[in-house]
Amino acid sequence: MILRCLFSVIILVVSGSVYAQESADSLAVVQTDVLRRTLDSLGSRDPAYLQETDLSVGNIPLSELLRSIATVNQVNLCVKVATDPLVACNFSRARITDLLYFLCREYGLEAEISGNIVTLRSAAVLPQSEPEPTVRYDSLQVSLSFDFQEVLLPEVARCITRLTGQNVIVPQNLYASRVSSYLQQLKVPDAIRALAAANGLVVTEEKRGVWIFDSSGERESEGQERNKHFVRREVYATDRLSADSLGCLTAHITNGNLSDILSEACELLKLNYFFATPLKGQTSVYLQHIEYETFFDVVLAGSGISCGKYDGVYVFGTTGKENALVTTRVVPLRYRTAEHLPELIPDALKKEVQVQLFPDLNSLIVSGDSRHVTAVCRFLESIDRRVPLITIDVMIVEVTKSTIREAGIEAGLGEKPAVTKGSFSPGINMTLGAVSVNKLINSFNGFGSVNLGRVTPDFYMNLKFLEEAGDIELRSTPKLSTLNGHEATLKSGETRYYKEVSSNIIGSQTPIQSDSYTWKSIDANLCVRIVPYVGEDGHITLQVEIEQSEFTGKEEKDAPPSTATRSFKSQIRVKDGEMVLLGGIERNSRDRSSRGLPYIARIPLLKWLFGSTRNNKVNQKLNIFIKPTVL
Image (cartoon, rainbow, N blue to C red; front, side, top):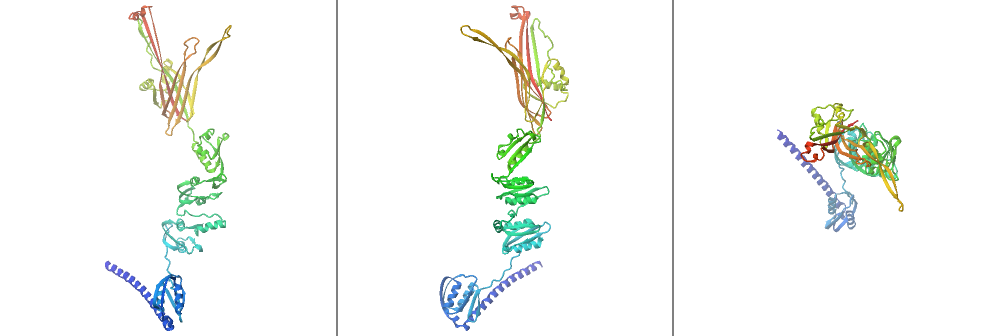
């Protein structure tokens, strides 16, 4: 059954096409027969049309050919042709009626006879129906779809108005304009702008729901000749520029005019704006949810155009020396001192601006081109952060180990061997088990560092007797505070003076000796220099430099006092609140003495019976405890 229906449909379609072709052919035959009978009737009216003629021409207009035939053969011809094609032909013994019939058939002419007067005119062209534009409207998504070619613009405007309810106006000078477009599912305003942009036209939304088409060339010429007000040209109509309720802009624009983009952005956000100079140039941007001031800076970057805000009005103009938009801002600082900040601003930012210090308000005065001033202000804002304050507990401890060895007839130990012990700070205490104490004591052997981690508040309470026993000497317990990246310095010590005598001989005949003396000083100081750097991960990097000098006595009575210097320089990294031990700076001294019977005590083997030898070895080590804390 289905095959039978399909076969019937095919037969109907084929028969319909054959019938249409036969109808067209029969119409042409009828028109040709009518023309033939009309021209044959001329012979009965005027025998001159039946005479024969010879004709040979090359590339002459058709009207001239017919006029020559009428002149030579004494017949009446009136020629009215829309086009005058060139004719090249050669006829011999051709009858006038046959010649006219041939020319009418070849060049599509019609013949009208009035007595013996023949009027030849171009055949009337039947008006062709205009193709209907394909315009589809989706009421749910409020979108349009186009698919048409070379369609009159008024027809497209009529379809858009009928489907969407938005009035699209076409001026009279564009009634004959034909447009083409193909797009799918585009919002109604964007679709109308895309239609205009694709066909080199301009469309403007005068008010909501009313669109007016115009040609871009005429709009520009009218603006120049009549000096009309500025009208934005939607040359980026196929792109998108929108604003949300928070005042952020989204722009997807390709090769858009700067003036159009800025005007549209200001109008979307209802911002007051003014163009001080004509804005030239194009740009392409792709931005998502950007604040409008950042949007202005991005769009104008590298264009030589500046943007400034004056009493709520955004002014756009070129940045040349004559037309520069000069802006002055006072930039207050919240967390930093403004004294040395001008030195930190990069030269690339300061090149076009002037920066002055205003210490009364802890501020900087920045003056210059508004775009460069904005760049400097953003840099200052980025570095105006709260600077961490670091408190550093430093404990300098000297551990002394002494060994006394005596041999001889009085051999033995004078006292019990010294035990390594010490007190580090009378104000800070520690509670340690046996394992922790051994670890702390063993860390004194050799140069290096040991991270003790976070210690309890009573860190040193149970070790006070070590200092009281004299085995450990507490050199200093300073507590320093400094800002991040700044040096903290502590210096304490004493100064001793010695007399320096100089003798001068005056005169040559009778020399006289003149003595003079001066007092000179020698310092023995403890210097501590620490520079902390706090990282984002909470770790603190410390640059530690410690130098300790002390007097060791005089070799002779009038000699300058001797000094011993020990220095320490290291770079460590600890967490906030952890304590680290740095140590290993040694100073060794050795004293050997002997006593016994004279002469006999010098004889080997006998000296052990009649004398004794004393060997005293003292080992001193300097150790530093450091605990940084970020406040």
